[in-house]
Every structure is written in C-alpha cells, then in structure tokens.
Image (spheres, rainbow, N blue to C red):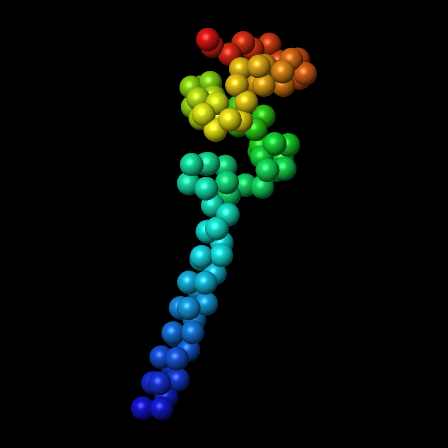
Length: 94
C-alpha cells in the first residue's frame, strides 16, 4: 500500500510540473501568427526565413500579403521598399 501511495504522489507531482510547463510555454504562442514558434531574428534573416519562404512559396501575395496587412506588418509601400533595396523586380497586385 505504501508503495502505491508513493507512485501516485510521483505521478501527481509529475503531471503538475508538466501542466505548469505547458502553461508557461504557451504564453508566448499567438494562434493568429503562424510564425510565432520561430524567433523574429531567425524569421527575418535566418537560413529558412522570409526570403527562403517567399522564393519557395508559389503564391506569397495570396497566402501571406493579406494577413501581413491586417496585422499591421506593412502594406504595399513597406513590401515594395524591401524589394527595391534588394533589387527585386516585383510589383504587388492592386
């Protein structure tokens, strides 16, 4: 009987620790942002960051642009300024 109590106590403490860990980790998660699991520096200039994604995405203006604009992450002028700096020949759709 004493052994079962110890096992139950260990399991209960373990579950409480896991629950607390999940709560702490989930505080930084934004369900509206598909990039929230990636640090901003990695996303902006990392190996598989923004440029990689845009180059490998078949339709970034359809899949990304609308959401970025809604989130206040820059509209057409913002995107075009980066394209101009990078010498990328692309005009966003009207």
